[in-house]
Length: 150
Image (cartoon, rainbow, N blue to C red):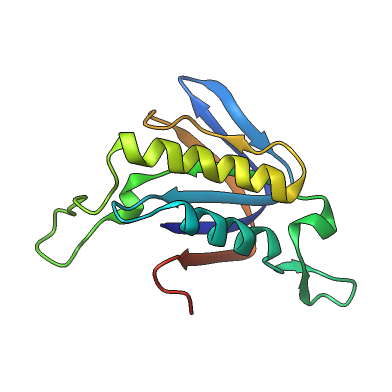
């Protein structure tokens, strides 16, 4: 499972010109679920996300987490994060989990983040054609892979 976390001042996702999810200050997260992912990946990643200290403190140092700033999360599923580009110019998505596996893990991530953060998580819609808009703050972008816990 991998996530691209962007610190934002605002973000929204639209489906067919209708806003599905929208936040102010917080994280806009793209989440890719792989075939070999499981609930332990969800729990580890959710805890890592909520504890991520990448918001500025009073001295301008990145030292505050989402809870410290009453931040929000917009979580978007994105199977293309599982792309393999090793061979040729057309990405392969064979490592991406099929919907019957990916959807429950995506929903578990939503629930885990809501429990840890103590508030509703805004989302897109799994498998939908979505338009995502955001104002990246910094810019700060962090990539996390649960299979590479460095």
